[in-house]
Image (cartoon, rainbow, N blue to C red):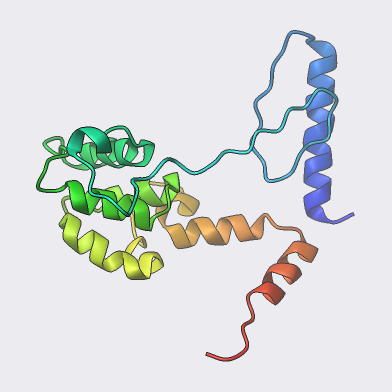
Length: 174
């Protein structure tokens, strides 16, 4: 049994013990793997909704997309005066589409509001890992950067999963 299976097994044991002791207890656990305990329900979390790239929605229509709402909310955290407007709607929609509705990526991009213009953010997203590096020095290291998050997540993989991941990342040619 590798370390990953050991940790999942330990978590499953704890959940089982808690549920046996407290029958009305509900537990919400997030994981890439099911715990395999009795009564477990799995819920696949999809990406946030994104604007259709084939059309130019109005500001009111954009506010209906989850990714846009998250971007605006987080951008306001950096700049309280930030708001979705006809002048920035296209750039915000483009950013959310480029980030494919992935909440972490949207939050990291929105954290650049005030340091970069929306146009600069969308231009630099062609190399998104490079743009989204950096962050608050008071955050935990795994939260500072998208790269740090990816590294942290990779370290959670079992050895067999790491080998498979390495094999899948090899490309022949250019």
